[in-house]
Length: 390
Image 1 (tube, rainbow, N blue to C red):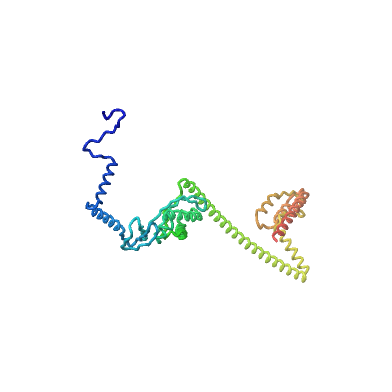
Image 2: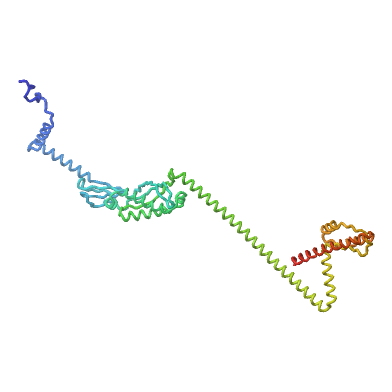
């Protein structure tokens, strides 16, 4: 019956002389070879032993190590700490029994960080800094903290935020707070790492960049301009106040000096008047009549020397009409300071009266009366001015 008839097994029989390539057949063949190798007298035992010895030698040789002068080797046996190997040559059980982790304790790596922070005056600043450190305790570095570098990054950012939050923006931008931030941040971060037992020692902290964020830059420029305008206005106000105060003090000193001088002059004038009055009283006590006449003459002389009266002598006239420009004469007398009394006008009037007609005898007394009234008013004005001067 043909192989491909219905109901029969459709597996094609292997060709004669062709090897079987199936995985099961290959596994069976390798099993047979291994069995023949370990049969007594087959000669394969020696080869297998040599192979095992070679593998063991290579495995044991892999435990040899050489540690540099700046390195330390932490040996662990099945994950448990055993010893810290110092620089030099040595050997330890290879993996998977023991493992050794090399740590460079002299290398100083730098950890760069950047963050957006808030200052004391509620402003934003973009701050970049770098932290340099070295491994001081390899055992603590490996086993005390799970991730030393992320821990150091987070601790440094926390302390930086605390310091920046206590300082104004201007001090950070102009560099005045740079030294303070680096010194205080190093002390704070080192204290936090020591409390964690991280086995890390900081060697330095540097502020690499500090600038305003782009959205805040324009607003900050306006704020800086307003601050400058405020400071300029304060300076101008202080200068104006200082100038006004100096002028007021100068005016006060001048007024005080004038008042003192006026007081001294008034007292001196009063003393002189009192002394003169005392002398007059003494003279009057000795010669009353002479003193009285003298006082009268002096008084009349003072009055008539400042008087603006016009005296007309009508008794010696012949009664002719008298025409005198009294208003012009008065203006001329007022215009000439220190002019003599109006006796000259009276004399001129008397001369004119001598050659005048008898008609003026009735008019002259009226002019004289007017002149007397004007003179009385002028005397009152003179007495008022004299009282004011005194």
